[in-house]
Amino acid sequence: GDSVTQMEGPVTLSEEAFLTINCTYTATGYPSLFWYVQYPGEGLQLLLKATKADDKGSNKGFEATYRKETTSFHLEKGSVQVSDSAVYFCALSDRASGTYKYIFGTGTRLKVLA
Amino acid sequence: EAQVTQNPRYLITVTGKKLTVTCSQNMNHEYMSWYRQDPGLGLRQIYYSMNVEVTDKGDVPEGYKVSRKEKRNFPLILESPSPNQTSLYFCASSPLSGGPVPKETQYFGPGTRLLVL
Image (tube, rainbow over all chains, first blue to last red; front, side, top):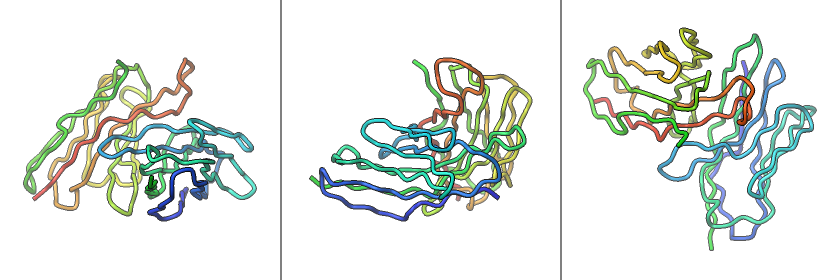
């Protein structure tokens, strides 16, 4: 079945460092791909999405490119801030058979130090 | 304000005592879903609904029931809770048809923390 694999955390960085969180997926069809962020004590919020190959999603300085050839959707940010400390989830929406089943990765905790 | 609400936010119960967690959204979204979040396992989908009276199983449906009698509400029912259902539960909704919000963008509720003794 479909699956999402993302790098284990926690990831600890200094402020202004470059961030990469790896995400790879397996899917039978042509899924949409997402990154969600969860701040402490809150629900998840959409960070960015991409719906087809080579699409780039971007928001708040974060970017991720839908790479069909490597089945990847890595999250990057050029300069992280303390306020970016959160748990990041990679996810896919499988639209095969007309359904919209969602698969999430296990989450990567990011801690940014001042 | 556009939102997904869940009640209760915190619940302690005992094994076998039926409970319902309510979920409501005010965005007229077609799609609604329930997830559980457990350490090291991320979010796992329990059930989802693509519209009124249309529900389907996610990855971990055992021990749970849902219903979708109205578009705005999607309650999660635990008929006979067990300790392995202790978890953090999230409800989410998403538009499937055209509109100002991109399709498949899920909006999450604040979560319900359940402890089954």
